[in-house]
Amino acid sequence: MGARSESMSEQHRQFIEQQKLFFVATAAEEGRVNLSPKGMDSLRVLSEKRVIWLNVTGSGNETAAHVRKNPRMTLMFAAFEGAPLILRLYGKARVCHPYDPDWETLSAMLPELPGARQIFDLEVDLVQNSCGMAVPFFNYEGERGQLSSWAEKQGQEGIEAYWHKKNQRSLDDFPTAVLSPES
Image (tube, rainbow, N blue to C red; front, side, top):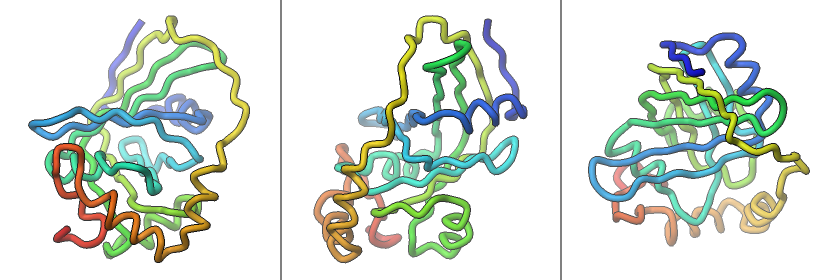
């Protein structure tokens, strides 16, 4: 049924690259646990132990706040078509912002998306797969365009104003550093 390994196999990589949706979970030592769905072709497997994904502007910024306090991160992928499978990647993450020195290098490996806010760099230390037999089938119909359209209309100045107003603190009032290392 389930298996564990310290790194991703080629089969894991192929499965991940086929997914249109993944979930990210983070938590600080105290406060709320965050679980968020992600999409938009925003994830890349760089090696058997490393994954990066681009985070675009949203209504909150929990993941960044949590990773700053505690770098634990879990990514989960589920097969909604084909053979059943749930794949989880566990590890330690770091957050990279547009003002960080390695932003250009990392962002060059990802699609350009309006409202790009952070890149998460996950060093995988455990890969777990399980059966996924209870996961229902779903049909992929396409990406939603609303978030990209909204970000394009805001422009960079509007996005940064939104970050200032809505993305600097988590639900538990932890800083996110979205505007600067000190914020």
